Structures are given as structure tokens and as C-alpha cells.
Length: 87
Image (cartoon, rainbow, N blue to C red; front, side, top):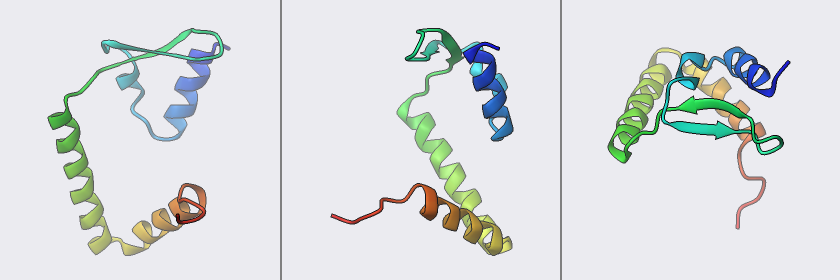
């Protein structure tokens, strides 16, 4: 199985829309072999800001309607992603 296929399978399991991995203008390569594993679309800073705002709105709405889901996500993030010590 190729690295591209493995990457696509893993991202799909994580809930990523794998259709976004094809047809873009930016080649994504694995550093181990140099193989192209995706071609993603680049975005402007205004497009990125709009998506962040959209995500924050959804997070806030989710916090009101499903606080247990947001709490679970925050706990998972803190356990796996948060800095371990403050400077």
C-alpha cells in the first residue's frame, strides 16, 4: 500500500474530507520518499480568517447546545496537545 493511500485512509478515519486532497494547486509530499500524497488548494488570509470565524461560531453554538461534547474535546486537547509547561 502506498504512502498516499495510507495517508488518505488515515485522514478519512479522522473525519477529513478526502476530496479536498485532490485537485489543488499545492503538492504535499512525504519527506521520507518525496512522493506526492495530496494536492491541496491554497487559500488567502481572508479565506482562512473566514473559516476560523465559522469554526469559532460553531464551537460557541456547540458549547451552548452540547456542553458535554465541547468539554470532552477540550479535555482531549489538553491531554494531547496543550503545552506541558508555561514559560
